[in-house]
Length: 441
Length: 177
Image (cartoon, rainbow over all chains, first blue to last red):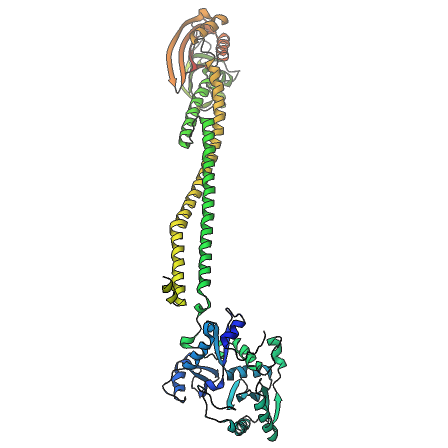
């Protein structure tokens, strides 16, 4: 960061020269343009304080029918409020012209000086005198509180500035009076001094008075904030102290900083975006949608091709295999089913496993070789065999049955009409075998 | 129009532009994007279905070709015997087997068309034939003619010589339409 001093230029001219676009801007309002009030409230809730503060402060201000803005700094039960007339804020905003939306805060000089010196000085309680061309500001800081702050003007009061009427001749006596009062209250034996550019004349007067009163004084160490502000191109290191304090304040929590840009002047988020930027964002959004749509069109085209290719391949197969040009799974299945049926009929009709001759062979082979059988009738069909005859013993019938059962061609073997017939050499056993043939061979 | 725009504050311009872009975006989404999105989903569904169908169809086509080849082979074999009727075949075979005189009758039983396959039935009665001769004769009948099958048999002992049999043979001869 650089610190520059613009003399004779308006704020707008300076900002234009710096090519400010969207940067945040902060303004330190002079002590002559706002009022400070110290209050002690029975509660500490920030929202509650916010709600009643304006009414509490109103009675303490030197005017009654003027609109004003108030913000405050809270330390325990103490509330240090800062009030500024709305017209003053309007005037400041007008000074910023087209850059008014960049303005994010109006910070009282007290706060800027407080933050700056607190960051640089380690003393628990101290008094600091900020000297510039227009006034000497005496501030007493105790711990984290601004205990007192008094502006002693060295020039005649200007229009629009607050404070007591005062002429240039009163300056030394007022300075001594106020300084003595603060030193007495603070019990400090010396003061820190910060001299801004242009304040040398006032400093000479103040310095003479301090030496005459044998009050110790020390310069506020400027080297402490040089590293924050970078290369100092200004010849006003003293003037940079409030700026440094301002930057310290910006980084603090909202409850620990004071900003007089409130109510209708509160910075709005939409102020960040210009019409042009909004238009560009909209166009980009539309472009994104158009790109997505184009991507979708390409994808759809690709998928359509895929579908057509699949249909074409299926049709080719259909034409080559089934002789049907157009792919129709149902029709293809019908053709295939018809072929399977024909094939089944042909294969079953020509398969010799279904031949009655094969069953005759199986029948002969299944009967044990040592069993003497005298057949009287054999009938063989595709699914059934019936044969009758005689054997010598009943056990022969059982053995025939077991033999037939062991064949894979026969599913069920039944024996019926078993009986005996007389003979000269003894009886023979007659039988009728009824055999079910396995359907699927 | 220009003067109207100039008279508007930045906030109003931003609002108008915002509304304009939202409207355009909404129209593009509703009229173009959404129908296309649905079309793509439909195409995706169709592609998956078609891919499944195509895969099944390919397998079916392969099976069909294999079965067709088998069918054509059998068909070719069956068509080769069209020139010789089953009755003539039986007569020729019985003559060459030397059992022509044992045949009591050869009786055609009619034809039946089953899905393009013609089944011709014939019944033949052979008397006083030895089991050995019968088996040789029937085996040669089946082996020498494709699609010729003995559909039933009835065997009874020959009353004069129990070593011989009287046989009724049912024959089915298959030809293609």
